[in-house]
Structure formats: structure tokens, C-alpha cells
Picture 1: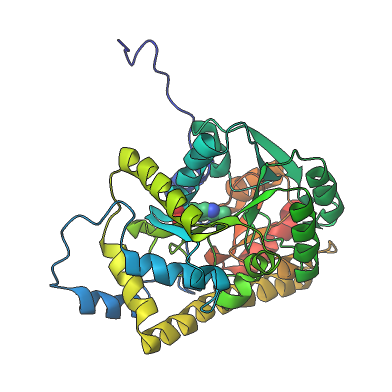
Picture 2 (picture 1 turned 90 degrees about the vertical axis):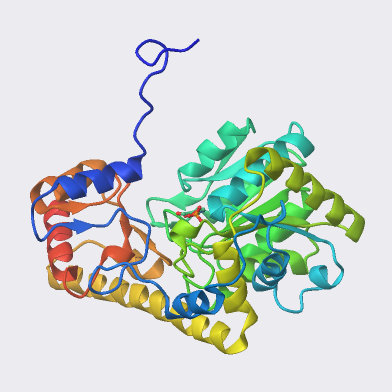
Length: 400
Ligand SMILES: Cc1ncc(COP(=O)(O)O)c(C=O)c1O
């Protein structure tokens, strides 16, 4: 029998939630929160997309309080895989894609990790260094062995492509390689199409299994097809692969916990068997997924004019972030900083890996009421036309 006072110790605080707590406790009216990984508009307000409001109206009052099947809402799954792999993808036409609705991106990764533990026994997962911190928790809890591969080069604040290729060259056959499909979190550094091609060839040769975590489709470049180009390159080369999709960022459905886990298999029979086994994992974990978000996404993706309006809205969010990168860089130069800040505009997606030290992050919080994670990751969603000059001036101060 456990007792809280004796054997159960307080769990460590999640580093990102810790940033929000410190921000909330600060009484400075000019404080800035650059820790949170959720989109904000230029007034620092959370956004509900117009297409989501329209879809809500369409489904309101409908009979949708019943359980969904274990694998979720099938029309939603079908539209999700088309969004990821392409409307005309051969693997979909062949009927060899296993797909289940999941509890957003985290849930997809967790389901996959559990599937991996059962059906890829002894295989390790190679995780980029650094990565979204929760990847480590997810694979740890599924008791999958984790290895890392080089990804980010602090000297250039860019991709360590040589290191990445070298590390994966040495990976054991049958290992899984976790790849961020676009807008790598936390670095904002993605391989070029040519580098993805080289990587795909190497992984084919070495029999390495790609698992794409795609939490930002459309959010990186503003174009959903462009943001899934890495996956399309791997499919073109004939890989079987896994993919985690999340609608948290690109539809602003954070709290709805809506996503999709899919696995492209070698043939229809394998696809069907794999899907049945993922469902068996889901059944014991949470039985079946929630219905509301699935209906919203299905409505948006299933109505051509609303789908187009969503593309426009997602592009608007991506463009605001891209504009903030340019503005931040301009302001840093204007503030007199002689440091190199070109990575601010070269990196992509919600985050800018600024390259500042943990001590400099601490000074930003203490002296300027500006909050971010201690790895120097700036959530660009927190940057606005109103606070960018103050942020640039503070960054210049702590780095000079
Ligand atoms: C790389 C990556 N994967 C997965 C997720 C999971 O997000 P969610 O579970 O909210 O969809 C995130 C969110 O920050 C992420 O950055």
C-alpha cells in the first residue's frame, strides 16, 4: 500500500508549465510570455478559427453524444490520411493505410510507442537531439529503448546534416527513426527537400522505419502540401511509415484533443491487421476517442469551400509568425546588436531557437519580465507588433 507522505514523491514540474506559472505570478503589465506553444494574434489573444465556428454551427444540435468506435470516426480518419499523404496517394488507393483517430499528437505518438513495444520487439527509437521534451516521456512510458541522433548544430544554429547521416548510418536495422515532418520543435530547423531525399535513401538502404510526427502541417509554410513534402518524398521512395497528425495548432483545436495515427503498410491485409492491433492498444488505454473534434475536422475537410477557407486561415497564422520573425530580426539589428541573428528568419514554424544561454534566459525573466524555456526557445506566437521592440532591446541587452 502506498502512502503519499512516504513513498510517493512529488513529480518534477513540467518545464513549459513552469514558465507559464512564473509569467502569471509576475505583476509587470508589460510582461511577455514566449513559453507557450499555442497561437496568439497580434493582441496576444488566443484565436478560434472562423471555420471552426462555422463547423460548430453545422454540428450543433445533432445526435452526437454516442460512443465512437474504438478507431474513432472513420470519415475523419479517411480525410486525415488524404491531408497527410495527398488526395491521390497510391497507398490510400491501394487500401494499405491503417488509421485511427487519436488524442491529438501526443496520443498518436503514445499509441505508436505502445504498438512499437508489442510488434517491433527489441527495436530502438532514434530521436533527434534536441526534440520536443515529451517524446522522451512517451517512449519511456512505453518501455521502448531510446537512442539519439545529432540534429542541431549550435555553431551554425542550423541542421547538423553530416552528424545526422553519420548517426543513422550506424543505427541497427529495424530501428525506428522519429522525424519531425516540418517545423522541428524546438529548433525550427528542417532539412531541405534534397536532404530529405538523401535521408530517405539512406533509411531505405539501412531498413530503418520512419515515424513522422506532424504537429504543424500548414502552420510552418502556410501550405499543407508543402509542409508534408518530407512524407511525400519517403512515400515516393516506397517506404512503409508511420505518421502522427495533430489538429491542435493548424485548426486551433488544442483542447479538443483531436489527431490521427496512421501507418502505411506493405499491403491491404497488413494494413488491416495493423489497424486492428492499434485498436487493441487503444481499447485498453481509453476505449474510444472523443467525438466533438472529429466532427469539426470532418466538417471542415469535407466541405470544399470551408476547407479552402481553412487553408486561408492557416496561411494567415503562418504569415503572421513569419512577419514577426522579420520584425524581430530588424529590431535586433536596429537595437545595435552586432551578433548574427539570421537564424531568426531562417528557422521555420512556431519556435525560434534563439541560441541564448540558460543564464541569459534567467536575466530576461528577472530584469525584463520576458519568459521562455531555459533552452532559449522563443515561441514566435507570443511576439506581436506591440512587444517586438521591447523584446529585441532586452535580447540585445542580455547578449551584449
Ligand atoms: C513535435 C510535437 N509533437 C507533438 C505535439 C503534441 O501536441 P498535441 O498533443 O497538443 O497535439 C507537439 C506540441 O507541442 C509538438 O511540438
